[in-house]
Picture 1 (cartoon, rainbow, N blue to C red):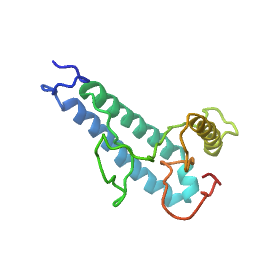
Picture 2: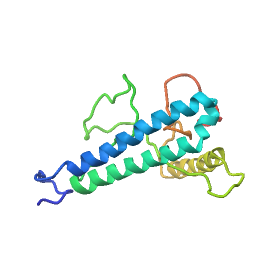
Picture 3: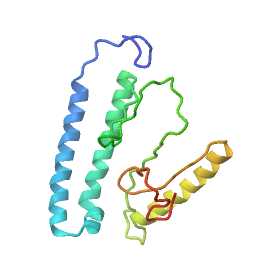
Amino acid sequence: MTESHDQSPLSGVDAAQFHHLVDQLAARLHSYVDTAVGVRAEFGSTEADEDPRVLALETEVGGLNAQLYDLLHQQLGLHPELTGMIWEGDEPVSHDPDRRVSVDEFHLGFVIGLPPEPTDQTAEAALGLIDDGGADLVERLIEAGFTVQEWGSARGGPVGFDDEDDDTDEDGDR
């Protein structure tokens, strides 16, 4: 059999293991939706975001996404972008890998669980640490000769950058 990262076409791969993992992921997503709807019916949005049942399922979904990525990468040599979000009209204009662009968006994501012991640590404290790390990373990028036009940190999904005249987000980050 050809190596998964080889330039040759790859044949003879059994897709059953991929479908099994996708079925597990779909089941967890359905459970997440059911749980989120139930929790939101009981609590406000902020409390629902912090509900341990919701957070536990987010962790499970994130873990299954990572397993799917690893399986696709190991077995097929792919580098799938399955967890990004693209709204209609936001699709890249060109998929030409040889086309050099002057700017591009990059995202770094974390799935973080709160400490198991009761502490004063919150998800907002984790976001503060990520924000501090982002500031350090911006400095390193600038030192390497890159320009950083915008950056930010967010909880729950990648930071979205739009073309509005808004210079800062609600946290004050660029």
